[in-house]
Image 1 (tube, rainbow, N blue to C red):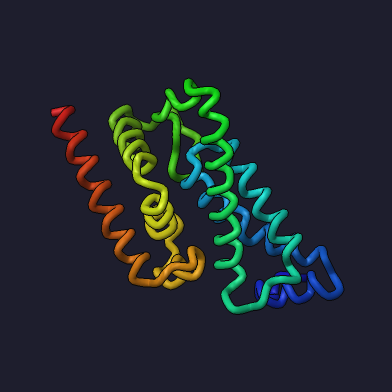
Image 2 (cartoon, rainbow, N blue to C red):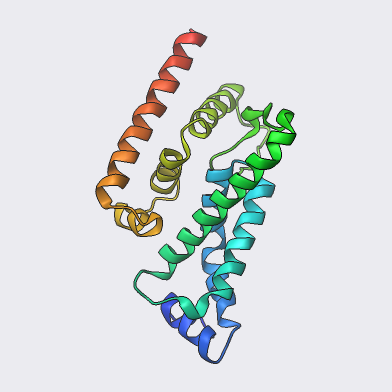
Length: 192
C-alpha cells in the first residue's frame, strides 16, 4: 500500500491520517540507521538500542518535520544525536567502571558479518586492524568516515545530516582518511 510513496509523502500521511505509514519509513531505513549507529558506537547491542531510540524520537517528532531536508537526512541526524547521547551516557558510566573499555578490539565500524569457516586468518586480522583504526579516530572524524565510506552518503547528505558546512565535511573526511592511513601504515611497520 505504501510502497509507491516517497518518504516525504509517508511522513505527511503518518502525521495526518495513517500513523502506520511510519512503519514503512522504518522498513526502508532501519538497516542504514543501524549501520550508522554501529559505526559510531562500535557495539551491536548499543547500536540496536540507539537505532531504536532514534526511530522512537523520529516518530514522536513527525509533526516537527518541516521538509527542509530529506527524510533520510533527518533520520540520520536524529541517529547521530542519539549516538552522541549514548556515548556521553556510556562515558559517565565508564568513569565508574573503568574496566569496560579494555576490549577495544571488540569494537566494529560496520554491521557485523556472520563469519563463515572459509574466511582466512589473514583477512580476519586485516579486518580487525582496520576496525581498530576506525574506532580510534576522534568522533567527529569517525562519523564522517563511516557515513561517506561505509554508508556511501554524499557530501551534501552528510552536511545536511550533521548540520555543518560542506567544506567542513570534506576536510573532516580528508583528515580522517589521512589519520586512518597513517595508523594502518604504522601497524604494518610494527608487524613487519
